[in-house]
Image 1: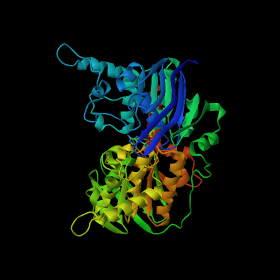
Image 2: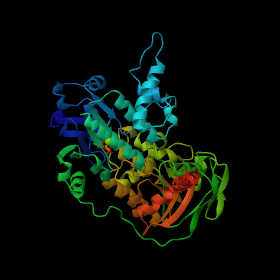
Image 3: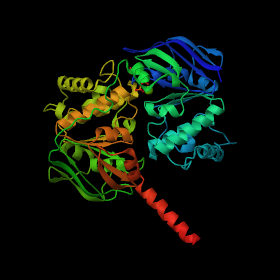
Image 4: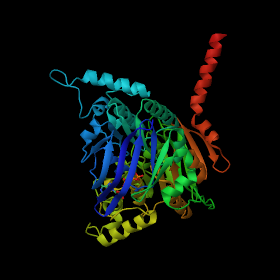
Length: 512
Ligand SMILES: Nc1ncnc2c1ncn2[C@@H]1O[C@H](COP(=O)(O)OP(=O)(O)OP(=O)(O)O)[C@@H](O)[C@H]1O
Ligand SMILES: [Mg+2]
């Protein structure tokens, strides 16, 4: 149990303008779960990318399974038993599940690839995880949660001794998390050492043996998980105390701004009716797959509507594509930031400017660069986005800071309705509070805020009113104050319960 399988000492890594790692140490023992914690941009992913050979370090010592490594490339890291599930999923979206699982280590037949064998093995690992997806399914068509499960199955299939999970649960449902924890325990029993990175601190107690805490590219401390209180962990991560996790503000509820009537769009958006008022945040709770994201997509004009109307200040607006929504003052910060929220190969400045070009261009259609810089600086300052300059590519930012850019680009617009879909996913405790404050700021300005989240505590802590969805329908609405998680969960599983009761009823009848 105590055998050291990874030891990293004095690790340094410099990126242009950022010292990402400064004399960092890290160790991992056989059969343990080591939680690696720190704020967005602390250097967690960078450190783990060094361990898995994705990045080369500038200096420092690295030992895996007692063997010392100089430069380590991904292939030798894999041979040493290291597997990594990246934070921003790295899958080939146009390939199938089986093809993704065997990418770079395909099984060859006599002439062509042995697809049958690859599918069979992929199936076994997916079944072990209890994942019900066809191995032929194209990965890009799957929701993030399923893609994540495939990454985990892939890591299992290479028989990793050291498994790094960078934010594995950020898109999983409570049930999928349970399943993942079960698998983690199973891997531990097999002697696998697991590095677990997560901003969902409340889940750590299920699996964590030890913690390593980093801040601003530096090693801060490590120790047994049980020797730390949650406040200790947070203050070591953030370097200060966080007094209010959910800084709710009270605003008088104003007039109705926005109304969705009888909206239907596919299986997961059935007969949706709701209104948003000035000065309130409306939370949309539910389990993954309840249809909340699909509702935001239909409202925003990404997916076609079968029927239904949308009214803004009492007047109908026709939204057939996102530009119609943006022009009307309805904006969306989507769930999957890498795919829908950002152009990762463009700079932060370009990302922020892009949806705002109508405001930034002069009469000749040329971008006014002074205005552009002003607009970016405002977004960066407002959200305290951590970056060396606004001209770096969006994909060089840490996950949490990428999310802030997605939100930041809408700040410049005179929006009337702002829709946030899981805005705090992968965001550290301190930055979460900043996002809540941002929502509060919008609420104070009379903007209607629609806030989709799978984290019930934050919905109850920040929203004024909560609408709950289950299986494409609204199953209830409650005032957040005084409501409980159990109440929300009951509404979120309304059909499941009904179905179970019906089943039970049928069983009883059959037995009679
Ligand atoms: N490829 C890169 N090029 C330039 N800078 C980078 C690159 N990768 C990371 N950085 C910078 O290094 C620092 C550490 O980033 P890292 O992604 O390791 O943080 P993190 O702790 O994983 O944060 P998060 O919790 O948000 O994922 C950040 O300032 C980031 O902008
Ligand atoms: Mg990271």
